[in-house]
Image 1 (cartoon, rainbow, N blue to C red):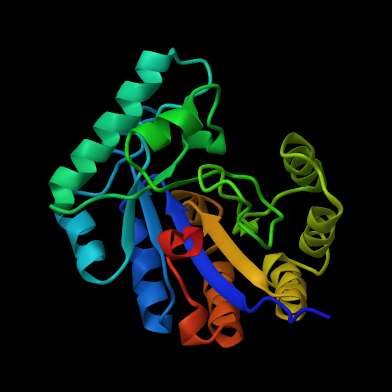
Image 2: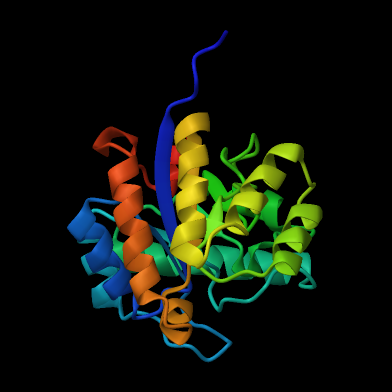
Amino acid sequence: MPDRVPLRLTTSWDDGHPLDRRVADELARRGLPGTFYVPRHNVEGRPVMAAADIRALAAEGFELAAHTSDHVRLPGLSREQARRQIEEGRHWLEDVLGAPVRGFAYPGGHPGRWGRALAREAGFTYARTTRMLCLEPGPDPFAMGTTAQIFHHGLPALLRNWLRHGGGGGRLGVLSDLRSGAGLPAAMAVLFARARRQGGVLHLWSHSWEIEQRDLWAAFDDIMAMAADLVPADGRLTNEGVSR
């Protein structure tokens, strides 16, 4: 019988909101990894971290990754529009950091018709989606899956995510975990117990602005404490580390 896959942990945070600094402080306090996907602007009107804050996160050991130039969703764009958003977002972030940027997340989580090929052509080594309910990132580094969002998703939303991204019996187990327990931390505790038994990659993600909007900071703190207790230091990786 093959050995169980060791459990690894990664976290990611979308949209580059200034409240990402608060997320980073909590991650650093607990020795947890984080990948922050940052656009240059956000057409939805939300603010984005200043260049100094972006550089500060990188200096603290977090991974900074691209999220298009303007946080524009790729489905519906022409190939040239999508290419420009992807490439300009990467070039801007590399200019801010003075270092290569290897990771990318699709705004809204969907690559559309062109996204995966264009992310590869732009020189990224991986791209993250919002495919949830996974305890492995999947075989395609340009369609990286996740496990759970720190957010109160109802059953219809979880079922839509399960169906939209190909279903699968293993993902149904994670879906069931996320619908168990009284409250988000309790449901995550059930999921974490599965992850401990099964191994693989526990990928938690969210938006700092949404945590603020939904008053989820206490839940976020509880969940990060559980994650830190669950996974030893050598199993804590950035999204890039998981993609290798």
